[in-house]
Amino acid sequence: MINLSIFNINFWQHLLDVALMRAWGIAVVLVFFFLVRFIANRLIDRVIRSVTERELHGPAPVSAGRLRTLGGLIKSIIFYVLVLISIIMLLDTLNIDTKPILTAAGVLGLAIGFGAQKLVRDVLAGFFVVLENQYSIGEYVTLGAVTGTVVELGMRVTQLRDDVGKLVTIANGDIVMVTNHSRGPITASIEVSVAPDSDVDAIRALIDEAGRDVASSVEGVIQPPRAGGITAVDSTRLTIRVCGEVRPGRQDAVQTALREAVYDKFMHHGIVLAPVVE
Image (tube, rainbow, N blue to C red; front, side, top):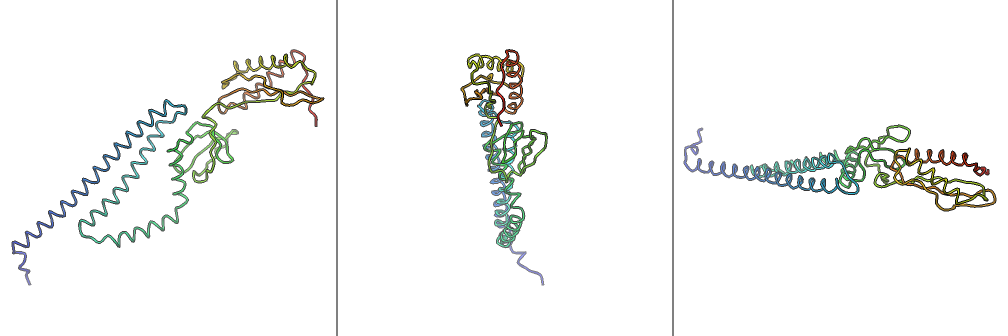
């Protein structure tokens, strides 16, 4: 049987009103999506630009590329959140019941969360490593029990090249303590033991001369090593500490060169090192 209501002007008027109302609702959602996204992106760009300009001229410069990566990550998170909100608003505008969809999405999200909670923890930890500028690529750090140079800083893992050349991969979520050796000079120190009746002033002068030789010939010395105070003295030896400041990662090389330089100076002037007492 033919529905005669379609020939009624009120039917078409109602249908037009509903269509206009739905179209207006969809337009509002689209304007909300693009406007909020535009404002958020502009705000993030301004913040990242400001932080980049400040950090690049600060005491601990950071990588501009790393900051841009952080900005892109934040933009992606905002985009997906806006997409989810906009879809819910569109469904509500079209009078589609969103409760079953939200319930199914919640159950699915809960299942994924339980299965990927380690992954989520690693990504969140990596996000805060970048956000807080804890360390950057090329810096010499200690992460837990591993010390080395950062060669890769990802959102999930960090890769270090240790002092013997091994590549160590650490999940960001497993990093409990970070020691960054690259945010200031490192102290390189050795101890020199001579006979207790030695001329301390002459010994210190030779050590300082050896320290200046090392500073001029070995890369990475910031402050030439100098003889400090007497750290130990007994009937068999007199021990003097020698300290200097070096760039991160150059501590072992400078200490080795300093020992050789001190030994050569002592041998040239006839100074005998104290014997090792077992």
